[in-house]
Image 1: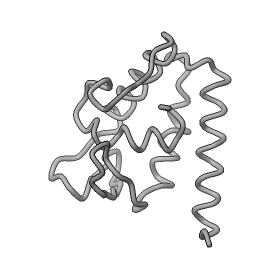
Image 2 (image 1 turned 180 degrees about the horizontal axis):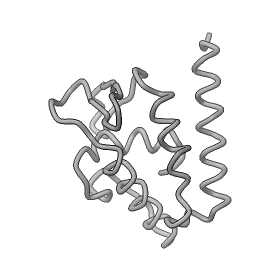
Image 3 (image 1 turned 180 degrees about the vertical axis):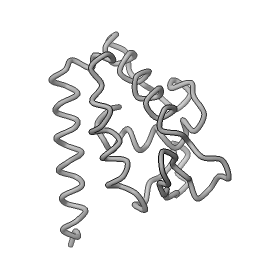
Image 4 (image 1 turned 90 degrees about the vertical axis):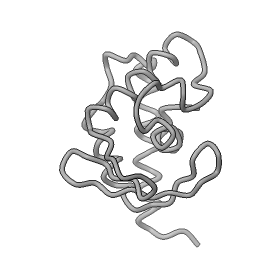
Length: 120
């Protein structure tokens, strides 16, 4: 049985995904605060990289720390990767893997963005 808190998080992610779709994946209209709120909400949840490696993250200030890495991913890098994903989707293409995001930490951001509905 799912935990109530994860159901609430999933609902927030679905709402975010619907909003992104409603905005026609327009990069200029990225709801950045809602994206950051989701990043905060999913802190410590389990994710899997494109290659199937399990990871978790924590947030301190405006930085995301992945348990598999020593370096952090900054909020501005997360925003930049989200904008890139939306640019690709707005152009009618598919974000087929982390390399398409073209930024540091893409292998971790890609599955997170998948869960948030930013990438399909």
